[in-house]
Amino acid sequence: MVTETLPDTATVRAWLDEVPDPEIPVISVTDLGIVRDVGWQGDTLVVGVTPTYSGCPAVAVIEFEIEAHLRARGIEEVRIERRLSPPWTTDWLTDAGREKLRAYGIAPPVDGTAQDVSTLRAARMAGGTNLVVECPRCGSGATEKLSQHGSTPCKAAYRCHECLEPFDYFKCI
Image (cartoon, rainbow, N blue to C red; front, side, top):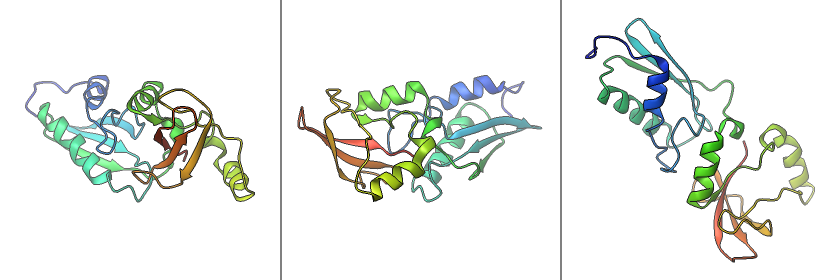
């Protein structure tokens, strides 16, 4: 290791706050909630990462960027451990991350819906749901889903009836 002492995990987490998500660069990997663990095993820094879903196309880039960022800070021995269990949930997004998404024009997941995804799926299959997704631009709840598939696999396409703007909604998982 280049530095004389090992940085504490709080310092390492602060460094990871600077690593942006490659698909949504205004949110960090820690705001996204995918950095699960940070700890030392001897002189090796081990970072546990849970992708937003197992098929996420950005996970390899995220892991590379985390490692590169830590090496640039002087950490020579870094091991990224991909953790699929427990699976990531939108409940792991930080409050700051939710606000960053909204400011960027992406509606964050509706609070509490990730805990009850099976109920939402059943409601959708029955022809509807009372889920209100607020427009990140004007705040209106008068919105409609245009497509379950948005600009990335983790987002759906919506439109606001008030300001008439299209926007992405970060899907609940």
